[in-house]
Length: 85
Image (cartoon, rainbow, N blue to C red):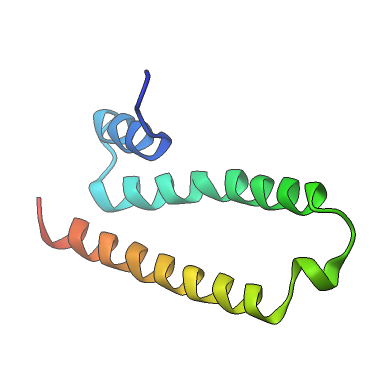
């Protein structure tokens, strides 16, 4: 379906199958882990073998900030799913 997200489709099908909202949300996020790891590996493979350039201190700091914001967003989403319909 053009424009549909993997998360949205997984969440919708889980709900149609009768899975509770919080469990469906957790499962949808878990489904993204292999995709994200694969994208990370391909990015590293495409960037060459100069590890010092790939993982400079500035890039590691930026990765840490983005990861922490992502974790906060996930916690907010789970809180929202638990507390609102």
